[in-house]
Image (cartoon, rainbow, N blue to C red; front, side, top):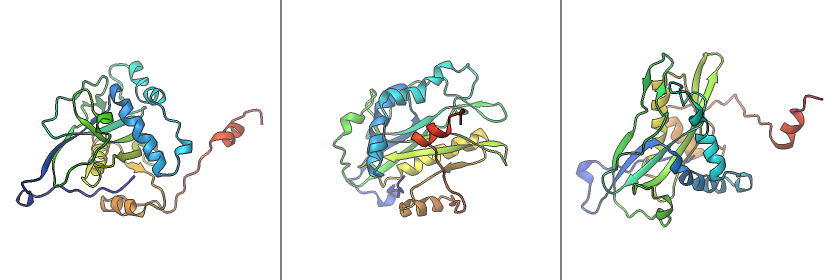
Length: 243
């Protein structure tokens, strides 16, 4: 995850050659899967983990949307599944967002609500270089600029759920405009409205700029904790009940 610095200019500083970009954070739909899968592989390259990336559009679709078809009408889609917020942009007025089935949230008190759709108008004083724009153009003509993947966690001590932010990615050409911050704000807003206790994420040790960025947001590093992982052969071996 990389830090984002906003380039939204005060009105009195805007120049005549500024480009207006309308941005919106919304929940991903089934048709958005290709726009999420491609950047996942780019992100794996950035972290030198391309050899470990097994994501496909099929596996991503199954993780994000198969469970939603089986949920009863009043279940909370954010309580047990992986979710994705997208940020989409357009130089013109943003169209009505696509319809989303079973996307109403339920807080800990049992109250239903719709997740907030965050809008932002940004004045960009340079040409946006996006040679792959056509690959990220939606049916409604907007361009997908980034995403954040998150899912529920749980605190035993607080006896409350939380949200774990797994990955955040902003496409090259749209970085430095505050889009990463908007995506994180959308997750934080949902966490608060659900009545959950906290929002957590991990970051690689060498990404010091990101650490500083997160601390400016009010986040703190859990210096006394380490992540442990069982996977591949180690998991298969230890998972055998016959031993």
